Image (cartoon, rainbow over all chains, first blue to last red; front, side, top):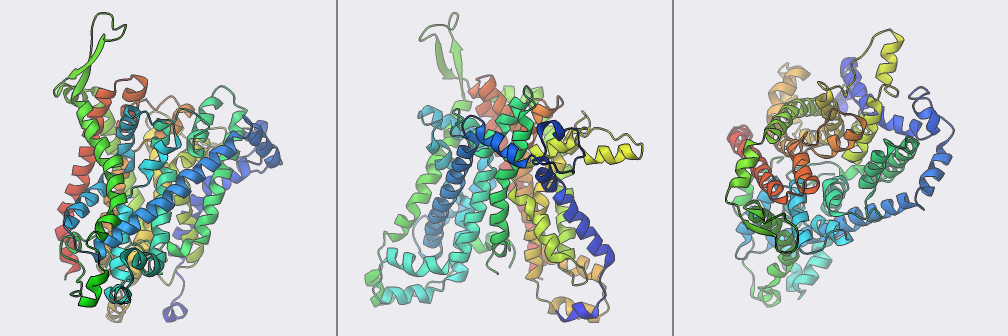
Length: 281
Length: 324
């Protein structure tokens, strides 16, 4: 930018921003340090002093009930990864239909979906549990996966994105060439939607990974837990067995590393326009 | 355009050209319904039916005959509105609602104020370390509430807290963050930490879409950065601020993970700290799904009315700004 060379830097402004960044780093730096401490050092050495026991802690964590932690990680990948991918597809199809077709009930469906944006996930977890319990479907992978597939906000974003990024002429041209609806969607619309789909995927991934209550109420068998519910149950046991605290902290570190990496890799997709779904990049 | 515009939604937003005879051949009138089908089925199964079933349960109760032992001694009967009456007059429920409202009054202004401040700084060419700060402040969004509560929970313990340590070095005794009067702020801090970066990015994206001619002119007229921020930038991104407030309100009313995770570390968080925790307690600890259903309905309706009402209330003003 041309002005940046002309204007002198603002010390106060830069200072505030850096203090904000340091505040955000406080727990993140701590979890790196704490997971390298032995259980006896965790509460005795200086908070930010590193220890030499990271690999012992990881081994301890891996030993816990024959690698249950890694199973929780895989479960999380299944719930959040597969759930978000399927949810993105569902949202893309519905968003495309509402953006590019006229059909009876379109406005009504869209308004109902908008209402769904205002009463989202967490409040629904207990009602979803009550229904699934009636159907005898609790304590299964499906009980967490199925409710995660619908995302009113994702459908909203997909609709706005298709309207903005896919011109009618392109669809008409494909149709004139004789392409059927499914083919138009798969070969023409989907490729043009990729940046929007990545954003919807990330939103839904974070939403599922963040929804603690749903798996917490649905699942009784701890082999089905996602890592969030698993670590919270470990923390509960820590009250009786303080040695577990090191395991919990190490687990917390390992559980956030993949997502931190994913965020850094995909950060250009995070230009979040809440209404338009990050069209600009 | 940065707003979640209802007008864009309700008015036909896209014009389709009249289908030419050639394209009519390829167009299947059932196609949009096929595309909508998975979403509609999932919506009905995961959202509509659970809500209706919960509403149904909220009107039911269990009648116990004799000692309540043996088959047939417990039957489900209609209860009218008595579950609602109990919920609305329950002291635990009322205090959890008040607590969460107070919590929201702390979280939302602090979180959005900081997010706006950081977004404006990111948008200012005179500020250094912008790329680094943007990345780092956004990072907590990748950390789920359970994990961030766990990390802060440890940092709140006197044996671990760096703040207690620093204060000890200079001979000051800090109050414990999880003491009875402060635990609300300890939980609020976790929510602010987790949410400020995301909201910052939302507001920053909105700021970036303002055409720069808009403030070049103001600059030539002699406005300083502060005046430009106050007079131009904030009014223009008002719709985004409104949306972030609505989403903030929704998440605040549903607070569950943070206090639940902190509970093993302190005695000062009751099982009915927030409305959702109370619903959980009624449904799973007390096995009273009928009361839990009634409370769920009340909470869902309250969330909806509050966020919808807020949207309606501020919308006219926001779009008056936008259409100027």
